[in-house]
Length: 268
Length: 91
Ligand SMILES: Nc1ncnc2c1ncn2[C@@H]1O[C@H](COP(=O)(O)OP(=O)(O)O)[C@@H](O)[C@H]1O
Ligand SMILES: [Mg+2]
Image 1 (tube, rainbow over the protein chains, first blue to last red):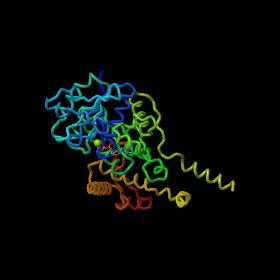
Image 2: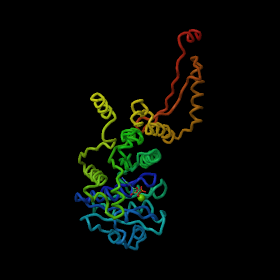
Image 3: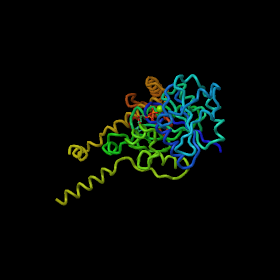
Image 4: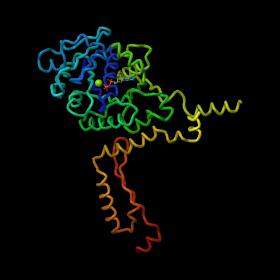
């Protein structure tokens, strides 16, 4: 095995990096892949609670870096899935506790053991971002259909290109089809035209994300969750399957609506 | 009902999403290139000066701006040429 290392990043905070990391990890593990998720947000540990593994932490990433624990010991196994692991961030330290070369070393040690290494990155473009992308083969850029999130995504794509980490792949999260249809939310095509990167996934705004996060059961585990399905679609695409993108630009187009209105008008 | 009225009267064309897109395009063209607006003005003046040595151009019609093609940035100068009457005067 030689793992693919993917960093989930965004620039802007709160757009859904941690949610995406947990759910893509779960979705890949659901189809039998061996996955390690690493929380590189030192001091703001979150991936553990989103994955529902917070009660089982003994050692963290900084313990491994500073030699208090072996990598194996810091890998928490998710009992719901055969091959999903989490390496949690330290909560009481800061970003300077690890360096980009530490991340490279850790990922190199993990690479032969697993299929995927997913790194959840902190917000920002400073040290934490450098740590998160140091070992990465591909970046997954998460954004929301919103001016500031798209702007920050563009900045991140530029930085990734400058670091020769490739342009990355885009996940647009928290899409509200009704708003897109009404003309009050940036449509997928507009965002892709502006950012000019490859699309990896479209995730709807979905309260099942909140509910599943409350419970510590990522939405990707819930067969009925729409967001969960969107994350499973991403896993399929990462496996090279040609999973089509559902349109989240509204249930039907303005033209269709007008046509229906005309027809109704004619009948009366 | 007002939403429908807006659509029928073309108000949907001026949707907030469209405004967002247009604003993003402008903001990103500045973010992506490290060129400050003041530099563009200087480049424009230099171009006008060089061209004016050969052709009679109206500086107020010269436009220079940055635009994106994919993720690539381009500098574009648009220099309208004088009509035949003015050109003749130049000869
Ligand atoms: N598709 C979605 N639908 C609804 N809520 C979402 C969605 N994606 C993320 N959220 C919520 O948004 C908040 C921020 O998400 P999070 O993954 O922590 O962002 P980040 O890691 O980028 O800071 C969380 O409360 C999360 O539950
Ligand atoms: Mg986070």
